[in-house]
Image (cartoon, rainbow, N blue to C red):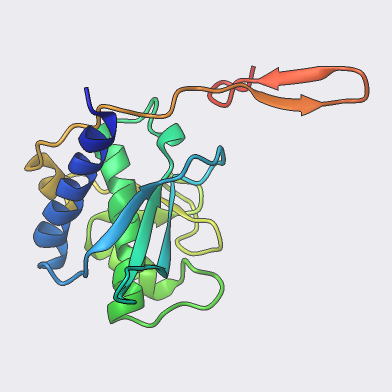
Length: 178
């Protein structure tokens, strides 16, 4: 058992697969990380936060493994592609000002088979500061995902969140909020 190798190998394979299948291998390589922060965001993109010893900069796509539980690999890989669209926009579109989910990003999302939505469901606004998506059945992403055989073996285990009141400590499950 090598959880680091198993996890990052499938994420790199997924990045390479979707880069080829959806973006015609135009996206530069990036550093894929897992964020241990317990927050609601499923992932994020950052432009050039890392440099190697030759001072070559690289982008980051970070996925939150605590949001993997209860979601299918297809849904997790759609989050990876969502962040790849941010990377695409920074390198081939117009880097956004605020909000980061703008019209250009939304149009690219739709072109790759992911419908932007502030609610993550039908009927949500297509743009905004916080924006999710849902998969367009049978479209580009869905077809590319059907050809990918990678499986995510590891996800973040539920952890109790602690909030202290004046005399009591309250613990809340991040998945069910009990």
